[in-house]
Amino acid sequence: MDVERTALPGIGLQHVMTTERGRQLGVISHRSGRRDLVVYDREDPDSCVATVALTPEEANAIAELLGTGRIVEHLAELHRQVEGLVTEQLPIAPGSPYVGRPLGDTQARTRTSASIVAVVREGQVFASPRPDFVFAAGDVVVVVGTGEGTAAVAAILADG
Image (tube, rainbow, N blue to C red; front, side, top):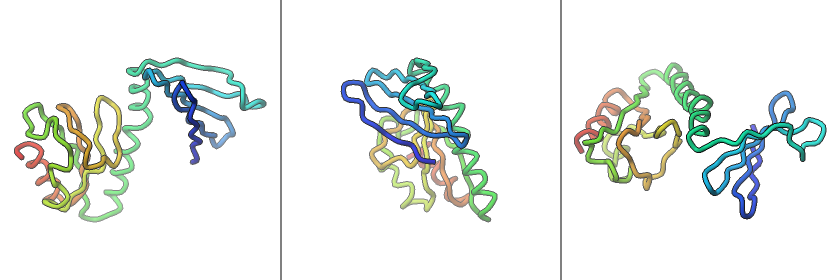
C-alpha cells in the first residue's frame, strides 16, 4: 500500500492513500496537533466530499482502533509461524527504573537477545522505537524473542 506524503507549508503534513476500490483517503496533520480525516471525490481527486476534524485524543482513539490491534495481530501470526518465538506485552510500571530514560539504556537486545519491536503509549503505537525513545510510566513494551529472553526483558524493565 502506497501512502503519498506531502508537506503543507504553514499547516503540517498530508498523507493520502488509495483504497483497493479506488477511493482516496487522507489525513492532514496540523502543527497544532489537530488531524483532519479527508475523503476525496472519486471524479475530482483534488476535491474532498467529507472532512472530519479530530482532536489529538480522537485521532489517538481512531489510531488505536485501526493500528494497535494490527501490530499485535501481525506479531501473533508471526509467533504461530516461527517455533520457539514468543511475543510479550510488558508494562512500564510507575516504579520502573526506566521511567524517563531511553530504551538504549536497557541494553535489552545485548543482554537478552530479545527485541523491543514496539511501544504503545496511550493508544499510539511507536513501531521499531529507536534507542533514544524515552519510556514513560504506563507504556506497554512489545518484546519478541525466546521465552527466556522476554522474561529477562521483563525483569530488566521492572528491576533494572
